Image (tube, helix red, strand yellow):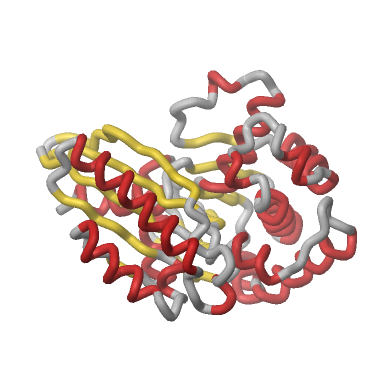
Amino acid sequence: MKRIAIIDLGTNTFNLLIVDLSPTSLPDIIFKTKMPVKLGRGGINKGVIAEDAFQRGLDALAIYKKKIEEYDVESTYPIATSAIRSANNGVDFVNEVSKTFQMNINVITGNREAELIYLGVRRALSLGEGLSLIMDIGGGSTEFIIANQDQTIWKKSFNLGVARIMDKFQLSDPLSELHIADLREYFTDELEEMFSKAEEYKIDLLIGSSGSFESLAEIIQYANNDRQNYVGLTEYQFDLVQLKNTHSNLLKSSKAERENLKGLVDFRVETIVIASIFIDLIVEKLEIGNLRLSTYSLREGVMSELAKK
C-alpha cells in the first residue's frame, strides 16, 4: 500500500486528491478538495501570472502541504496546466514552489492534459465501443477528446478556458444579446477543426468532465430537490430539456443573482454563463442527443496511470 497526493494546479482552481494505491486492489480515494486560486486573473492573456495571483497560488499550496503531511503521504505529484505553461514567469512559480515546499511541479502540454482527462473519465464511467466527445472546460484551456473505452481517436487542447475568455471580452452584466452572439461566433471560429472531426465521426454523445459541467448538474439537482441522489456519484445523466432551461435562466441572470443560486459554488459565479454558452453551442451544432457528466478528470487520470505502475 502506498499513499500518494496528486495536485492539479489549474487556472481557476487547485485540486488535491489523496489516494491509497495497492497492487492488489482498486485505488482508494482518502481525501479530495478544491480551492479557488484564480491563477490566471489579471495576466492570462498577457502571458504572465500576476503578482497577487502568484501569491494566492503559494498560499493554496501551503495549505495543501499541511494536509499532505497530516495524511502521511509518501509521494506527491503536482501537475501544472494552462496558466503556468503559458506564462513567461511560469518557471519562476515552479522554482518558488520547489524551494518553498520541496514539490517538483510537472508542467504538462495540452496534449498530455487531454490524455490524462481521458484516463480520468474512463475510470468514472463506461465509454463503451461507440465514440464519444469528451469536453473539459478549464480556466485557461478546453480539451476535446474523441474516444471510446479502448482508445482515443483524436484529441486537442484549445486556448478557450473560461478565465481566458472572460479576460479577453469585456462582457456586460447581465450579458447582452450582442455579447452572447460574439461569444458564440468566437467559439465557432476557433473550434472549426473540432467540429469537423466530430461530424466526421458522427458524434451523438457528449461527456462533460468535472468543473462547469458539475456546477450545471448541481444547479439542476437543487432545482429538482434531488441533491441526495447526486452526492458521491462519479457520473450523471443530463436531461437536455432541463439543461436548456437552466442555460436560458443563466443567460438572463446578473452576477448578483447567481451569487444566490443554489448549487453554484462562489468561484464559478463569474464564469458559469460563459461555460453554459460554450456547452449549448456544442450541443446545438453537433445535434448532441446524449450528455453525461464525469466527476473525474485530470487528477483521477493521474491516479489511474499511477495505479498501473
